[in-house]
Image (cartoon, rainbow, N blue to C red; front, side, top):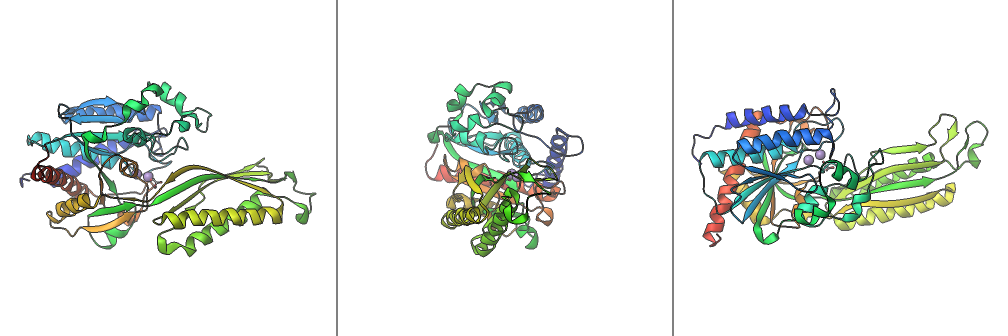
Length: 421
Ligand code: GLV
Ligand code: MN
Ligand code: MN
C-alpha cells in the first residue's frame, strides 16, 4: 500500500463515525439499540449514507441486514461485516467498529481505484446480541442460508413476535430465503471487532488474529414450586422455587470453575421470581443460563451434569425443573489460510501478530457455515466490553483498517496466483 495512507486520519474518522452512531439510542443516558426498532432504522439510514459516500450501492434484506455493495457488477464477493445492535447500556465499539472499518476499507480501495478480482459487500447485521428476541445471529443466519424459521414466533418482552417486528420494519418473511448468498459467489467473510478481553493489551499489541470462536449453549430454566404465605409456612414445609434455583446456580458456577481449563464459563444473566412479593414464598422462577467452552463435548457434558443436579435438588425440595434450550453453536475455527493472510497483514505493519481465540460470539461463527472466515481483533482498554467504559484508541482503529485493506489485497493476490478470476 502506498505510504500516503493516513492511519491517524482513518482512526479519527472511525471514532467520529462511532460517536455519531452511539448517539442513536432508545435512551438518552444509556446506549441501547435493539433489533428492528426505530433506533435500528435510524442507525441503518446513517450507515447507508456512509456506504453511498464511499462508492457503494445499498440494499437491505428481509432480516434488516444493511448491505453496501462495492463494484456490484462483479459476481464474486468478499463479505465484510459485523453488527449494529447493542446490549443494554453498551459501549460504542462492540459491533459498529467492524461495520465502520469495512466502509473505511472500501473507501480507501475506491479512492485508490484498486482493481480486485471480486467486489465487496459490507454487511451491517442487526441481531448479534440477542437483546430483544431470544434469537441471536438472525441476520447472519439468513445471509448464510441457515435461518431457522421457528424463531419467527419468538416474542420480545412486549409480546411482539420476530415475524411481526420484521413486518413492522418493512420486510416480508417470505423473502428470507432470498437473503442467502450462493456459496459459489462468496470468496470469504471477514469481521473486525474489538477483542473484548485483556490479552492484546497485556502483550502491548494493537491487533490480533482470531483462531476460533467458542461454542455456546443458551437456555431458559423454569423452576416450579409452591407459592405460600411468608409468615405462616414453616421452613421445612416450603417448596421455594427461588431457593432451589439459587442452589442450582451455585452448582452451575462450580461446574464452570472445575472446567476452566477448557475455557468454560457459565452465566445466569436474567432471573424472574413470581409472584415477586416480599411476603410471598416464590412459586415460580425463570432464569437464563448460558454455557460457553472451546470444547463442545465438555460444554454439553456440563449441561447434562446440571440437569442431573437439578433433578436431585427437585426431589429434595419437591420442585420441578424444566430446561428450554434456544441457542446452540459449536466452536468454530477461523479458516487457517485466512488466519495466515491476516497475520501477514499485521506483520507488514511492523507488529507481532498474536493469535487468540474469541470467548465472545460473533456473526462470523454463522458466516463460517457459508464460506471461509477470518477475524481481526483490535485491542480494547482494560479488556472491558458490554459496558459504557468500552474503549479502543484512534491509532489502533486506524491500524486495524489498514491491516484489513492489506488483508483484502493479499487475498486478491492469492486468488490471482491460484488462477482465480
Ligand atoms: C456477544 O457479544 C456475545 O458473545 O454474547
Ligand atoms: Mn459484538
Ligand atoms: Mn457484544
